[in-house]
Amino acid sequence: MSIKAFLFDMNGTMIDDMSYHSVAWFNLLNDDLKAGLTREQVNAQMYGKNDELLIRIFGEGKFTKEEMDKWSMEKERRYQAAFLPHLKLIDGLNAFLEETSRANIQMAIGTAAIPFNIDFVLDNLKLREYFPVIVSADDVAISKPHPEVFLKCAERLGVKPEECVVFEDAPKGVEAAQAAGMKAVAITTMHGKEEFGQYNNIIRFVKDYTELNVADLV
Image 1 (cartoon, rainbow, N blue to C red):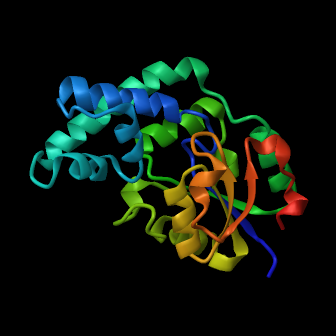
Image 2 (tube, helix red, strand yellow):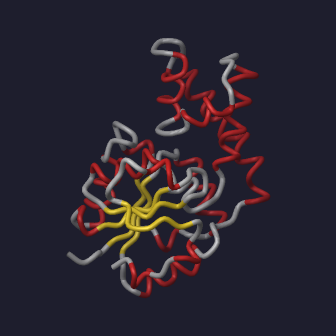
């Protein structure tokens, strides 16, 4: 079956920003919330929604919803302030998006980011024209590795799951794509190829989009 849509994760997949998220979480969790975690332990928890991360680390009932929202926004403000001077697309992605658009392949973003961070990226980099569908943390009940985010992208684009290729940087995201019945391209910005060994849906490993062209994927 031919490919009709490309679905993109955002953080670490469109922009190489995961180290900035790591620093913001590490400092907030340890300095503000006294979690006592190593950087490796923090990085291992960096998937899904922010409140899910806080619950994984501190357990249910440690924070009210209002408190989790407060700490989530504080973390994102710190991340944005640190990353803004470095905000740019991963190498080759701008040309790849233009090529995809010319080929009439539909595009969507499926991310665990909150709208505050999605707006930060799309508005500063002027990318909205490419993405008529955006599924954020606020649009799903369960985050990756559950497939809901990518299935909603496909549904809103009006395509079948097997007609989609997902672009992801994280093993949990590739797992979500596999659970959705979708092939994936793994961008190795934060995770090495060896960390994806349990998945059978990956069609390419690349360090950036200069190694890709649309014709090879459809």
